[in-house]
Image (cartoon, rainbow, N blue to C red; front, top):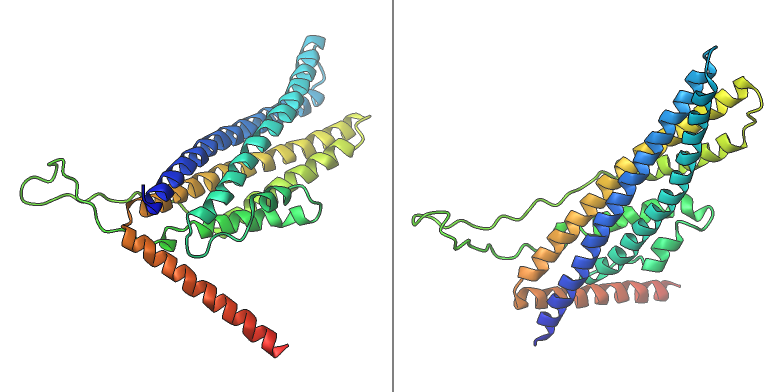
Length: 276
């Protein structure tokens, strides 16, 4: 088996793993958004009940039970969604370097994951990692291979149909920034709501409204995250398609470009040292 055949086999194996994790991450994000919608509706019902003058005891018990269930679901599914999302991100960051033979990828999986947990750093690094991952997997990073004819007879005897590449998804940087900004806002609003006093009816309503705002931000962040994961996943698929169908000469040319890029980078470093 040639070196490029082994590389193609490794790419295909890793891409299958990444795309499977992407589907799990999307399912987790949808579940997290659904739980946030549920808790927001329960919170709104609490506000309505507090504005009523005649509410039966069973109704209050049901409302309080639903609030407790929502809190448990939010904790459990939120943790599960975070785990599957970070597992997808870690493997995708590792794969991004493999699918770019010329430049590689400058973030490591550990940097991508730890950036979510380090205080202050986590205000910007998750956005930067996902932005660079999205842009680094752009299909234009690898040349389009030669057209492949479809030999199934679908075009008739007068012309030959050519396989058309699926369009890779994309999201604007503003959407990526909005995703992380909304997620940070939802955590901040949730912390604020949990620290607010709720001894009186007015205080309880204010805390419920803050929780509802937190849930609304979580729903919006989950929706944007689903779009983001789908776009990156489609870019992984398209980048893999281009590498899988590239000829060995085209792949060899990518290695030549990588060597030239390394020489240019080394020349810049040497020039900088000389100036010092």
